[in-house]
Amino acid sequence: MKWRIAVTAVALLCASCCYYSPSVSVHAVPGPGREPMVRVRLSAGSPASISSDRGMVLSAGSARQSVAAAAAVQVLFDHGIKAVQGARTVLQTGETLLVTTAADGRLLVGDRSYRGSLLLFKAADGGLAVVNALGLEEYLFGVVPCEIGPINNSTMEAVKAQAVAARSFTLTRLGRRQGLGHDLFDSYMRNQEYEGAGHETELGRQAVMATRGEVMMFRGEVVEALYHANCGGVTNNGSQPYLRSVPDTPGHRRGRKAFCADKPNFTWQVRIGRDSLGAVVSRLGGRRISVRGIRLEADRLSGRVRYLYVSTDHGEVKLQGEDFRAGLGLKSQNFKLTESGSSVVIDGRGYGHGVGMCQDGAVGMAVAGYRYKDILRQYYSGVSLKKRY
Picture 1: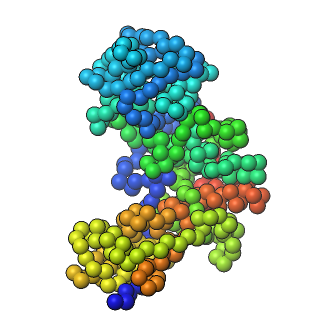
Picture 2: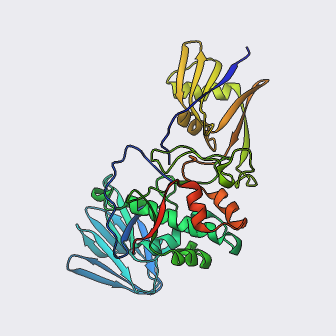
Picture 3: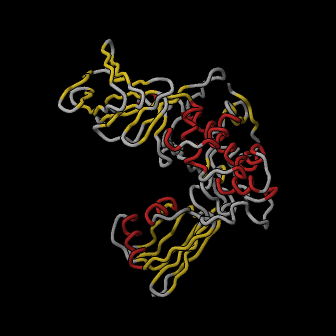
């Protein structure tokens, strides 16, 4: 049976992520002044192996224990927080465990090193929470290279733009998870990619320091500076007026070559068997169904699929474009479907949610000679830049 595949374009607004959840309430951003501290929940297992090249001090209440340089302790949650070396318990507490080292030292958690200090406590899910506490600028040292990708002198203006965007995004996240004991997670799947001091680069640090304390503002508030890998030629609408859909071209003019056009994720293609696609649709629809046709409803401005209407042997099933993308592991929601024999070909554009700064586009702009402030204003409409500290 031939499938019916059609596309309907509609003008819709969407909220998406660097990670972004529209259901999370917005808290007031801390006022200007001194550099804030950031608390990052690390992706560390339990027990967590912790050591330092300069030695470290474990503290909890009035209890205090020194640990020699390079000597590791295993920290786990067992009727409280317990730090052990071999068979010996070094320190046990029902409170939060603080781990510090010398100012120029680094703390090693597993195979990753970190600046600042560590806080270990019982997480809300009952497991062990390992939180890295450090200054915002040092946090950005470990974020910027992970997010913007390979750095060289020709792309430095894009790296500076990434630093300002990541700093602005971070400020809007401070205090949102107050009851959980941290501000952000260390993964781009939930916030921003942060891999600690071991992934810093000299050029990345230079970009952060060159823009120290600088953020984007809109109507007196720090902007929620979302960003993504590649927009496929046009960015996606977000939930804020400064996150509007714009062509990724000089002057936002349509028909011009996109700044991100030469990158691998600008276009992509996936071929999937009709049976496999039917299995995904069945899982998303909640029951086993036979797919007879698919109609796509896409945003007129960005081309991203908002809904899929699937004709089945049980009537029409409506699916969210975001769920369909996740179910198939597609790079973005900007795609079209074409039937090809026993397969369906999915031709797509871009990588990520598409809202805010296109990182590949920012790199393209930098190579073309644009400055970081021009890059930021390309992707964030109507913003101004301001020093917070």
